[in-house]
Length: 139
Image 1 (cartoon, helix red, strand yellow):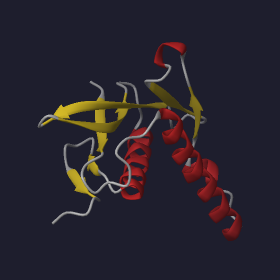
Image 2 (cartoon, helix red, strand yellow; image 1 turned 90 degrees about the horizontal axis):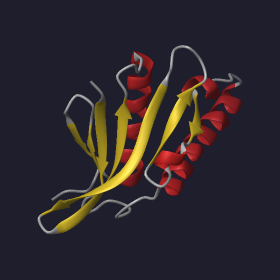
Image 3 (tube, helix red, strand yellow; image 1 turned 45 degrees about the vertical axis):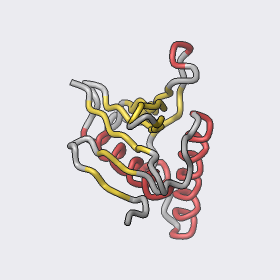
């Protein structure tokens, strides 16, 4: 059964919503940061840190895209955006899905990407295991 993690934009989040293009830009920025760090350390681990290519399919246009693994340890992760109605208010979110045949490496990278995005966007993160991490300022 597929597993999902959610990055929910709540009061105090950096942005109220993200488009797919903005989400892709955030992931590309993450990859760029990895490559700069690798360059400083003299160890080319940016491919190990982000072992995916960003792919789209016509049926997912505007709704989702997927990260396709570039080595056998990683298969793919599906990432999409959406919204839900909570107390007469639209709450936007990013959904990260691990398909049935995803590897343990995919789950680890999925958690890593979710934590990065959650912290960057000051959002509420619902992990694959059901636990919740709050990166948004709360009182």
